[in-house]
Length: 509
Image (cartoon, rainbow, N blue to C red):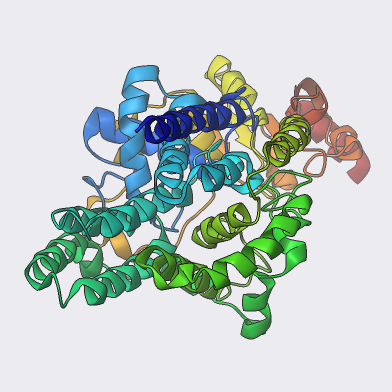
């Protein structure tokens, strides 16, 4: 009896320590690292703000199943999960990223409870899971919902009433990210078959519940909007090769994600030294026949289906689309760790140095890519509301969303720019125009023939307005908007039409 209590206390202690570790690695400088927020994060935040105030998104759609966003029709569930933090803490990076942080911490707890402290430890320190908990990523929420559904399905073996809850969360994950739309259906089918002979009535009830939940997304599944990302991301390369890249040791343990905003700068999905316990864990995974349990079958399905979907896109390697498979790999790594406390201490020590250095690099090397400069831009725009401003967007994303977010632009004004007839076909408008006019601000490319002859402010990076162009068109520098390292990110110029016209007339004589 004493030994059982001691083991239980040790397990609870391990769970507590691992959770604290996860909170530190994910929570230190939260909201400031990464510095700035991306356009996708801004879309989630501003649409949550719009829904909170008006019950409609930025386009005027009442509680959409998918957010039109920038014509990509992203997850609405993450946006809805952001409404409460925005109400409680205001519209800022912390509130926008909080659902992802909470999802990541819940995920660690679920892994510890279901797969053991060793697996929880690996998830707590692995770069991929830390990174996706620090910013607003739909895929992180989707993974947590998906895994919760799997955990409840396993518990249904002794508590059948858990099965409807399992199918509930699996179905909800389909609203969180595109990969889970497919993966959840496959897992629901697998679990239904697994319990069919012994739990037929509860399986039927659970399937009806899952169907009921997924009817709305099924209803719009054949619209251009629901398939916009599929159509724009359709792969054009060698599919078998792209699929196998997700199992490449180099991509898993050495190279960071090719996309600059999808991983830490100098680490991969897992640390390079985790390849040793991974190899040892494969042997134990096979010899223990862990793949035969419902947990094992579900995670094996995840490790096959998620990269199969990700490989259908043109990206060489996208961690965010293949995130579910990394849980299975983390479980395998944990099997190869053994029980030596020195191994865990070594892993903790090395990973702490790695994560700290990568957090610093992420903050200071990636601030421009994460849109750090747009908060200062929004401040400048707000303080110059009586002047005409042109913001060059030739090399930028949807700049308007940052201005709307940071300046708390009234959602009703953005909504009023949309034709109400257009809203009737909300899920059919995959087209998106980056050019916007909001009050005194025009967001568009610069046209020198006309813009240099108009009294206004021009804002661009050094490629949009070079020093020689500024001299040629008689622009004077008003201010420089820096990145987090005080290096120039955007230049603000004032035009002088009279000087330009005079010079043009002289040249024509």
